[in-house]
Image 1 (cartoon, rainbow, N blue to C red):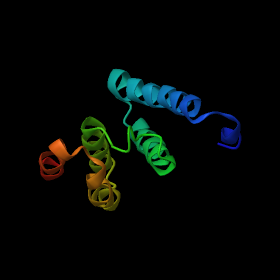
Image 2 (image 1 turned 90 degrees about the horizontal axis):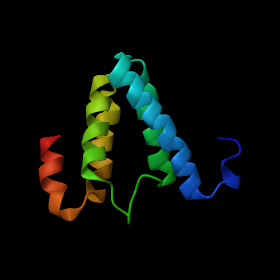
Image 3 (image 1 turned 90 degrees about the vertical axis):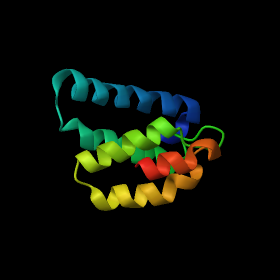
Image 4 (image 1 turned 120 degrees about the vertical axis):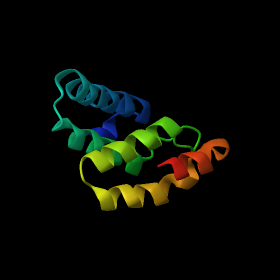
Length: 102
């Protein structure tokens, strides 16, 4: 994170996507639940930087995945805050259904 300023945002997003893919592989292939926390932390960092938004919106699948991981890691307060803070960034066509589903 120290040298992020030298990378363009799209390259930075790509690097973090590799990290997320590694975490996902560890979780799914090796059933290594310790990577759930890393996965959530990386996503939160990318959210804070605005790097997960596409055209100002958060993909519904990502919203649901992050809620699931937040609950799986026991970060209930984080999950509640995420649910409320990011619902307005969901595409309007999906917003109510995704919000109420989670």
